[in-house]
Length: 294
Image 1 (cartoon, rainbow, N blue to C red):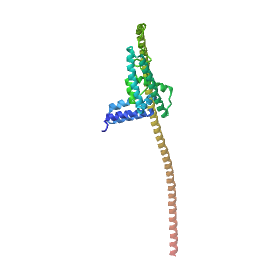
Image 2: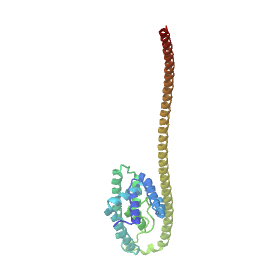
Image 3: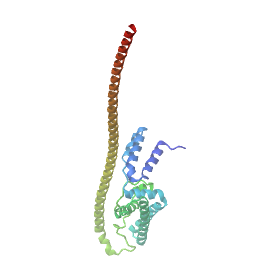
């Protein structure tokens, strides 16, 4: 059974994220143009709004395509982490939470290692910054279903900073199995401090997201500029070819005119020689006639 237009468009969008980042913008624009030509203006608008993946996001997308089983562990450890955290917050299972956190770190390290292989195979530099972005995005995927969904589908556009709150082991105050009574009075200040940390981290995350959006917009603008410059270079090259052809044609025209002028001169000389020869012929006939008359 043939796919519906919507399914076909969705598959073509998915294919965009398999391309190298430098090919994304041209392919995206071509797809949007094709959708618009077939009457899908809404789909074309949505496709046109897609952003070129950053290097970290692109590497994770390729891992999602080539090793879905490895990324599946992210979903497993996220569920394990949620269960352990609920138990820890209820006053039991602090050790279980620590173990879940350790398992999360191992899974993240394993997936991050895969992204390094992807980047090396693509001839790209595995920088410390990109590695950190990959790690933070994987951490975010264990706490956010939206991030995890985009990651598992291989459609990440940019790296994501780990959110504060649920699933954030670093910001979580682990409740021991038997909390001493003296600790109870400290809970309200701790919650206030946690809320302040949460708010600060949200501001940082918003600033990071704004920076990423600005960087993606800059990348798109640079790609559009490069495409325009490429078209301008092609047009300039075509103009140069036409100018050379025009110059050559003018040279040939001048040479042809010279040949015409020389030919006219030769014809005029031949005509004069013909007239002179006819006169000589007439004189000779006249003399011959005169001799015959005697």
